[in-house]
Image 1 (cartoon, rainbow over the protein chains, first blue to last red):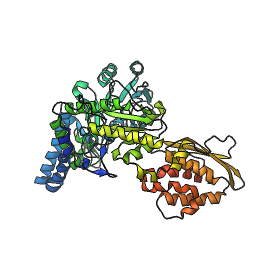
Image 2: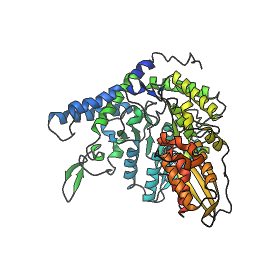
Image 3: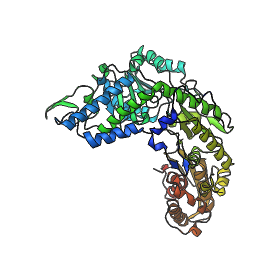
Image 4: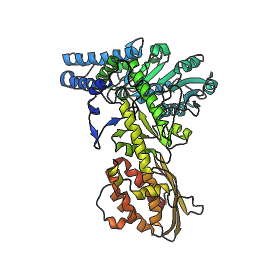
Length: 415
Length: 148
């Protein structure tokens, strides 16, 4: 398969140089050059991120926010610098609006937990039919606790939100809304700005699950005007176990803490405890300091490449892959939204996604096979699972060619 | 290029995947139970008819990968006519084979075509799901079985 010359050159984007920054890519799997296309599950880490963690442990390791000694001051500074980097990356008004969490899942649970005190029976929580389990289950648990009702905005056959049905579900009863920015199973990018505007007409606080979107789309939380935006670092070229919650200060100040412990308090007696101020109120215990520093380094790295350049490159890979996949008769793309991120979720006629996953691995190609933690989406499309190729800043047109050749191979093998 | 993959995907497996044996709902089943692999979403319903302590008939329905479909197809074929004890014994042999323990392949008969699965840790449960489901069914469990 020839590489489309028009697509192959986004001005100044040097993918080969970027690849050299990711040591893991340079290896053979089952005797073949690794083609890593499971970026929607987790992305690989650039050397700068790995080095930042090594540097921290080799030079600065200490607990933060308490020691008066030099190492503790250094560790605290690096940790708090990472908070500033996250704030600036999302264009938050203040770094105090950034709460570190283990990932998007914990961030959502933190917010859902706080709203248990604010919701009552008969209130409604609105989500969409394309949510990841992590943006379904915490709200189900909240509804169970409070007697609130979970409402689900439906999607169409392309995997897009049905706008009129969504609007019809927003009312004075709606007391919270949680929406994914980009679907992990389908690639759909939701019109979140318009959704937030509609929800705000009814004073509904909105949480945006940005786990899938943030590596691909420039996020400006002030322009969006969302109350909350959550993401996981590990999909953003940072380590696992670190993520962030952006929350408007006026919201965070009136929210109950998530966990009790050290660092989240200002004064403790056996009679009473005064909580620390935002964001520390939500960061009980010694945090993932190294991971947080790694997240800061990942953001520096992304900024050095440019999120818009990354997005353009990935969109061009998706377009190329989509065009090629139309030439494979047995292939059906699941998720064909007009506005879509770099995810190609597909099924092959008569071949189960798990067999696809194993057979692709045999060709050195890592794709995800399964329900992608979005069982309701699978039910909607009437499939038990899909295979999913997802692209990142370091993927190439040649890798898309390898993917398509791999698919052709296994179709031939299955007969 | 995929030659080594033939160890896992032998022609017999493709054959059973394309034309699964005993793939039907059994209206007059004595027992039936659902098996589910929550990791991958594979599910099957297993039916058996008993004649004393013998399995007079076995069938299945469901949706799964080639490995789990072939495994269910082969299993329902082989346990027909066996006593519950014989089937349980075969399950323990099959489980050992799938997880890479040494077993006498002769005892496993046709099931030996699934031996390659032990090289693929992520796929062992695909092969064993039908057997775990049968095991539960023979023990009289009524709740759905999961591999987790």
